[in-house]
Image 1 (cartoon, one colour):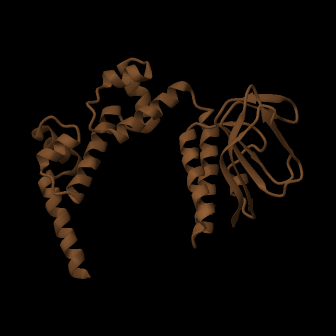
Image 2: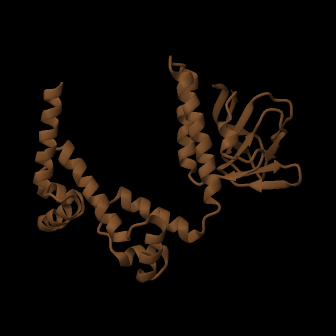
Image 3: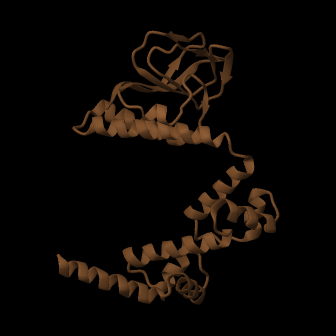
Length: 263
């Protein structure tokens, strides 16, 4: 079980702010929103905004403002579970957040649950805390990536979220700062599929969603999925699925009819 003791957003302190606690019986998760000096057992470290720190119960937590007012988000909580230890989160050590906006959002949701106290808030807060710790683990893993791997992941994210864009191998290669031939080699090695096949697969997946959830004609769906001609769309859709968009939609209607009859 996870029990939230307190959560606070936009905590702002004077430039002479210092924090020291060695007797706390709760877990403490801090996300800095300004520069801060962290006092580690072996040295002092200056960290930038959007650095996270996790302190388990009884561990010395010591940090202070650096070069101006100090600001942070933080949550104090109790837990009898080992989900933090299982993810090998380093305690008391700075963690550079890869996606601070995601952590910001989780803090906001956690704060709302804590202060509104709905009937299921306790369960919700426990799930949110697990997500926050997973985000920390993602950030730690990200530090072991090369810059090229990070650029490939960002490229694939854009492909998955914007399949309608007019992607070309040349533009993808420029984004990763490699030649077109090398991009195709490293992309397939990283994700198990060529970059243009990845675009095609995502476009067809998106088309399936439109065919199932909308009454759009094939021409409209083709445009929404990034195709400039209906013929090209139908040809690629059939190559992937083995049927035309119209046949796929009819199959969905038949399946839906059978399910309704079964009910």
